[in-house]
Length: 268
Image (cartoon, rainbow, N blue to C red; front, side):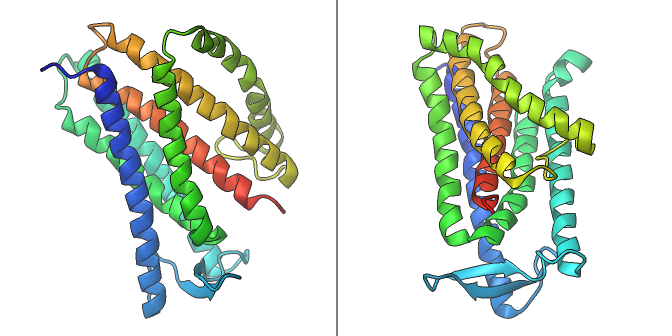
């Protein structure tokens, strides 16, 4: 029985989302064990505190005090994990373009494994950011955000070929302009080329984070509507192309999660 291109994409996309959720949950669980034992985990120490509802709320020790060892360690951890995340995206894309460059295609499990590795490297960053906020509430929002991203792609599949997706495809580049200007001014004035411009006003960051939480789900919806069209092309209906599409969907999902965490953490 021939497997549809849509199923292939949703299978790969669903796998990496499930891996991301389970990795974040496992990381937080391991942090709680380390805090209880008074041990270090991920080169960090964690303190057992309790929120206003009496629930356990871990805090990385001294992570908020600039100049302390804990502060330096947690940002070194962020930088290392994000660097590995970008590196494995690069490795995944190389493995997917292997056939065009060398003349033969790598086994499907290689790019698929590399794609899953990207989820493993971004998971500690999400887990630490969730711990710094309040894992009891934010973890639930994190899971709902991932589910919402998958539903956005599914909505696009249902509306594929409709006039609504055609209009959305025309409007998305226009709606991207505020985000482009926002990040360009950060590059010009602050020299920050990657990530969120932390040197701007917190209220501006929060507004743009909310804006990103609208734009990127719309992008996911539009990308979902294009899956069926790609599958109708016999040259595109391959396992490698399905992994590539799933990888693009995952990167946009990561963007949504970062903006969700920024909305929750930049209200001051």
